[in-house]
Image (tube, rainbow, N blue to C red; front, side):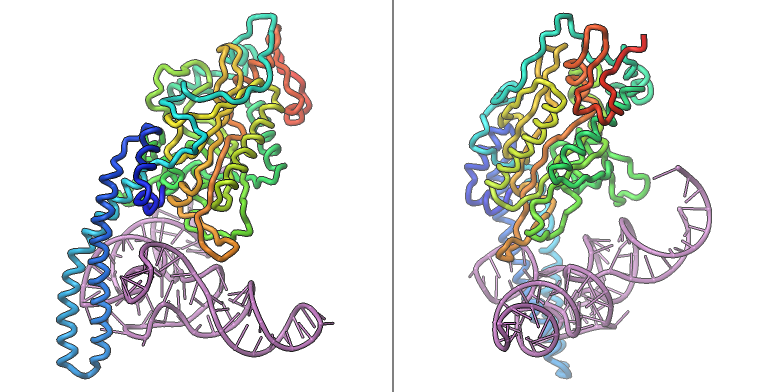
Length: 432
RNA sequence: GGAGAGAUGGCAGAGUGGUUGAAUGCGACCGUCUUGAAAACGGUUGAUGGAAACAUCCGGGGGUUCGAAUCCCUCUCUCUCCGCCA
């Protein structure tokens, strides 16, 4: 969420940002609504002030029945007035906030303008795709030979985009997750295992809602309509943004560095026909997420954004996979994101780089929505800045991992960094 | 799932209809004293909007009233007991 005062002062910057992010929003309408709200608020507050004064008059009147009755009568009249005005104000405020929640954040000047992911810009390439000397198999074939995966029965159980990991597939997933948590926590990040179920305010705070609501699984409320609804998180980020909601942190504690792990659920609405094979795009997966809460300072955010990228690159490098980093263009940026890097790992069977990590910063956009603040050195209360990046998402990471390390005989070499998490094992080998 | 008790400032804890945005204690900060520190003493110490006046906030929402932290309804959360359970 942007500061309303900023929108008032810079409507053109906000409009331009929305256009470049390809977000349809009527800023002029928002500002008109804001003006009306302010006017009405002035009226309501004046009425309330009169009401408070009369209240004091009633006390001051004491035993003077005449003055007392007169003041009570006047009070009644004002109360009737506020009773009419207050609901009007409340409605306006709700309407204004709903609109405000849809105003996207301003992209950084370094972000290229573009309509969708095809206009993302590669700015770093590391490693060279291997020359196999044989036709590399895709991850589905490799995992089948290693008896790691059963998609058919996964689909029987839970429908399309579901899967069952099996045997070494399970061992590999657990090893990867533990490896990622260790690797990041060694850099001073506190591990968190967070709820995969969260309330609506967490999603609003994170800026997943209102726009991304169609990608989120909602749980049926069983009882009353006003029972708080729960949703399945698409990333631990949602829960982590929510966990400090309403707090005023001590500035001395910042930056707070978390590495959170959770199951993640995504409806993948509107992706029919995309990545239908294997485990590239699934409804449920596990993700280890890096998360930073830092001071309200652009340079600080930028520093951590780069640091989070370096951490993710370190993981990809340790797993010995060729990758490149793209600078995500405005049209492919989320509402709240100021700037985003994606790491894409080389997938030999596709002859393409595919996204495995996503590194973004938000300035105080999420903090404003989730109301997470801190007291700075001068004692001033300010909104924090938030950032997050993937550390590792499974099973997707298995695709480049298994494909890049496959051998002609169907075995897969395990990168040395991962071996300690698999009891020192050096390779996965087909049973026959 | 059933029965009961509670939710107040960073923490503890008063406050059951009218200068209570909130006593008191602790903590924190500033100062005096001290070679330094401790102790003692004095002072300061919530947030949001607003230039200010002022308005709002005592778990959330709604209601009663001229007036609500205080009364009513409802939701959430915490605790105790029973049931169930990994």
